[in-house]
Amino acid sequence: MNDELILIENKIYEVRGTKVMLDFDLAELYGIETRTLKQAVRRNIERFPEDFMFMLTKEEANNLIHIGVSQNVISPEYNVGSTNIFAFTENGVSMLSSVLRSPLAIQININIMRTFTRMRQLVFACKESSLSVKDELEQIKVQLSEIAEDLDSNEQDHESLFNAIAEISLKLQLNQSNPGRVTVKGFTKNDL
Image (cartoon, one colour):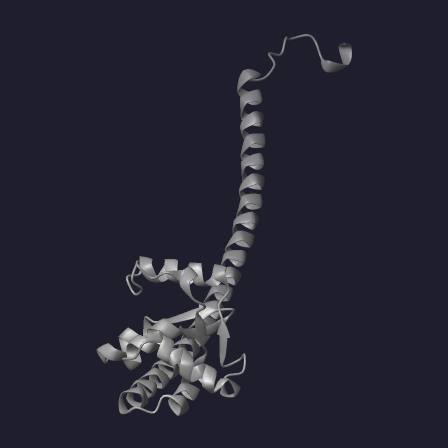
């Protein structure tokens, strides 16, 4: 895969259940300053409704910066408190192409759209494979249930068998300890 697409993929985060890219990452990719990107957005704010772009809360920004620094995709010197961070959804990034019209911005936007598409395909493929995994797990559960039933049945059979063996063993022991009566001549059972 193209190294640029991998670089872009590393700059896509999930915030509020949506895949987004951050203003400073986009500015870096476009080769412009973050404030220049923000100025262009503010001048065309009607093109960026909340489902295209939103500002991160302080907590969201701190969490993302911490994740980015730990993954070495954000510089540890980045100062969260110095400015508000814009998060752009896939549609927002697409809209940036109408605001930032340089040849580099257009090419970067094409690659970003390809990356979002590729990620969607991977998620879809993962969901399909997870369905087959779920089916396999259900089959395993059924098989384990059948094995458990067989074990219970075998356990009952073994218990019956052991009881029968114990009963026979007891009878044998009684017969050996009482090998029979000695009959004394002259006495009969009726005389007693």
